[in-house]
Image (cartoon, rainbow, N blue to C red; front, side, top):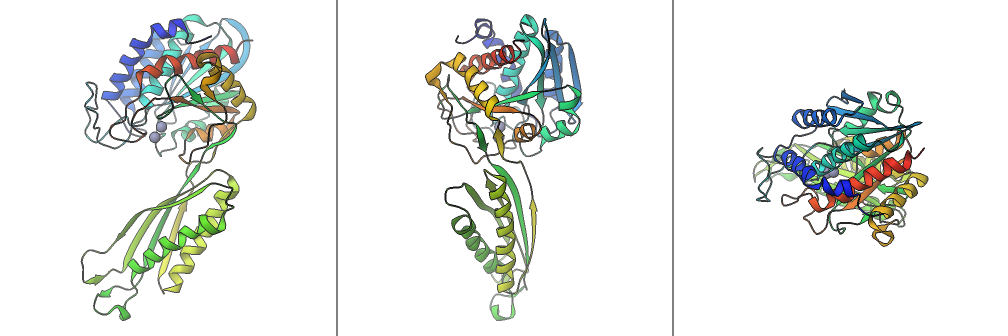
Length: 387
Ligand SMILES: [Zn+2]
Ligand SMILES: [Zn+2]
């Protein structure tokens, strides 16, 4: 059973919704226009309930099937864009300077709206489909905010599913795996204090630039020497700020970076070792280091049974040979990880073809993926809620 015919007929309409969102990107929780648009559409489709203000600007739509049943599944899309300048030259390119839908969340929201339209029209299932539109996926933990507002309990969600487009994977294909599929992402801030002074008298100073450089080098030993080589881990220092001119040794320096892992154990080990290495290295040079280590998104872990189920639905849509069920995990992170900590479910990648990468200024969601992703959603709901 390939692409759903009715969904294929909706492709142009769904693409038009996406282009409108693409032209009006909004960041983090500030997705007022997008959320209002989602609300209007869900109401016009005849959703049984449309609830706003879950996780500040999150929106939830509920569609009840016409067969009797009590099972409830959640289908989740994200609505927020990114703070970067679009360089696509598309007719529907961003009208907001410095903001862009560079992760395809416009496509995710449009596809879930398309699924909502179909499901509200047909209602060929038992139980309820809960459509979850979350804000602030890009670093703001909007999914967690929705959970804290009672998303799962309030709507009685039993299982939850998510989807992300994947540049490099051909359109019409899916990729998924059971277990860890995306990394945890923790934030590291290191504030160094040395002793400022004249560049000509280094012996009277404690040079925070030298200390920072040594810390960056030493941190590379954490992944290389403290983590099992068969495990995955990343430690990247991505910001180093110090100094203002060429004849002053700066008193202060600041480093920022990220630590990523695919298991809770490795995640913990990274945190411990990074702390020890930073403190030990600073002490070696007589500097003070204050490390602020903040836990970001956890490891995204697909539940075995639901991942197998999702893969089965994807095979129905795309064909058996178009679904990679042993996809390699990626070290990017996803807010949906919080939802999978709360309920069984699965996250799947849908092919975006040969596009620019996610978060790139030339990226665009591929409209050809719309019938694929939307068909996946509607078949997933109808199959999970077959009664
Ligand atoms: Zn992103
Ligand atoms: Zn994304």
